[in-house]
Length: 271
Image (tube, rainbow, N blue to C red):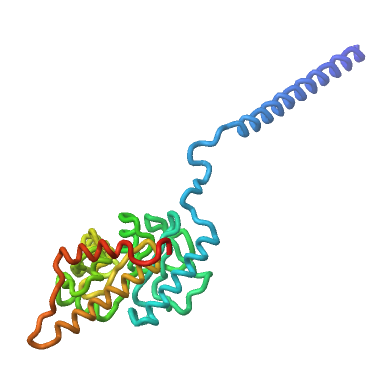
């Protein structure tokens, strides 16, 4: 009797062990299949990082170096004082900008500051220029790749006197025609950016009333050259109009149009 009970107990234990091993095997198979299923799930749209428009490190470094050189040039040429003025250049879908309140002679390669076209910071930790709305407005709505903003003395003086720089020289054609003055608005605001865009319509440069200048171009060199030309024309008009009893002769729209057409082929092709 006892022998039969022991045999039945051993049989039950063996049955339970076989059931346990079977359940464990089923779980292992299910886990393996699940892992395989995860591996085989196709990537959802947007899972892979879109690299289009994202500049490489060398491209960013080169553009930043050129931007800093342009900012320092503004100071050395007397177009700004201290940390005023700002510069931007677009590289892919990233806009590199001068940071706010940092002396340009102290900027290093590690200070690179960049935002996307919506203004979200994507490079660096320094706060971007307070005039970021103006720069982004140009980069979003035109094909310009570079923007230069200065507080040039003669240009700012003219911005307080007239609504449009009188065409005293044919180099106005290089900016698309007579240079308009954008109505005053507080610096760093969207209102100022909107006023600037209206003044820039059909132009590559404008004056900001009681503020300074904005120019843009395909390159930093081109944008900066337009700034220098604009400041020079403002100085010229102030000088000529200061002669007592005389009024400066102005160019006609036809004369400006002819000059603008000739300026399109000025210089060396491809340089």
